[in-house]
Structures are given as C-alpha cells and as structure tokens.
Image (cartoon, rainbow, N blue to C red; front, side, top):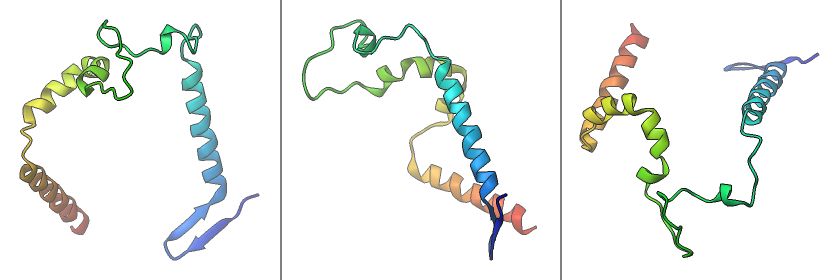
Amino acid sequence: MFGSIFSGAGFWDAGAWILAFLFVGGAALFIRRMGRSDYKKGTDQDEIYYSGNVVPDEEVFTVPASSSYWGFREALKGYYSHLTALHRGIATEYVGWFVFTAALILTFVLV
C-alpha cells in the first residue's frame, strides 16, 4: 500500500511512521485515561499545593523548584542521592566528562 522513498541516506517508510504515530498516540491516550475520574476542573482541585499555606493573589508569583517537584524528588530519592553525591557544580568537570565520553564512543566506533 505504502511505498518507500529511497535517498542517499537510507529509506523512509511512510507506513512504518504512520504505524509508529498511531501506536504512540494510542499509548498516550491509554495513559491519559488511567487518570483519576473524580477530578473536577475549576474547583479547589486546580489549586497548587503551597505547603498548606494560602496562595498569594499576586500576579507575579514564583514557587521554588524544590517545592514544585517535591513528590517527584521524594519518589526518586534513591536515584538522586547517588547523583547529588557526584554533583559538584563545576562546569569544567562536566566538559571533561563530555570530552572523555565522546572520545570513548569515538574509539569504539573507529575500532
């Protein structure tokens, strides 16, 4: 039904892309439908959680990331505790790791 388009860099199969989009879209809709059915938009359920305090009515309002993502960080505490032990915040260290990793990958590709 669908043909392949051949180019100098390989082929592009329209049918495979359509099937992939349908599969990913179906998976996304399935995950979305797994949500809570008792959610009501426009009620107190829409309010942000501000540590039990009343949320200010100001137009300019910021919530620190440590508060916004508390549950996410708490759920992945075992993973983040190992990462924060390695994290020192020195940019040159990250560049060094990047160069080391790129050189390692290049070595594996060329050998």
